[in-house]
Structure formats: structure tokens, C-alpha cells
Image (tube, rainbow, N blue to C red; front, side):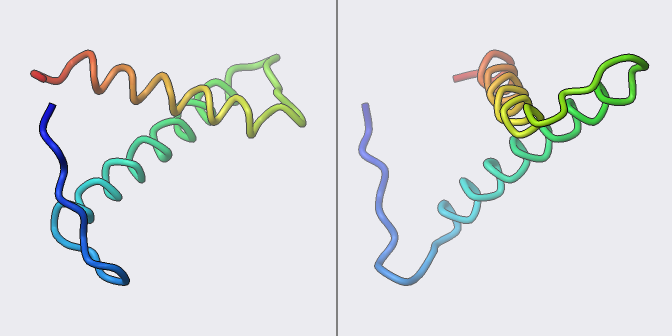
Length: 70
């Protein structure tokens, strides 16, 4: 396993920005999945919506890892 270089304190490099961007896309993907499920008639998560969003984000991340070449 290769060691990932660490950005200097209080700064971010291109690799760090890429990782933040991937995390953002995973979170947005989970929110979009939750929204799609919410518009299906008869399904409402109520107070459990934040947990469902988190689980959907994990599903999006799993799908990304499953479809990637590494």
C-alpha cells in the first residue's frame, strides 16, 4: 500500500481538492438517491431522512468503488 502525501497545514493541494470533490459528489449522489425515493408515492422517511441520506451515500460510494478500475 502506498503512502498518500499529506498537504502542509492550513493549505490544500490538487490531490486534496480532488478527494474533497469526490466526497462532495458522493454526498450529493446520496441526497439525490434519497430525493428520488421520496418522490415515489407512499414513501416518507420523516425523522429518519438524515440516516437514509447517509446510507444512500454509502451505496453511491460502494457503486463508485465497484465500477472503478482499482
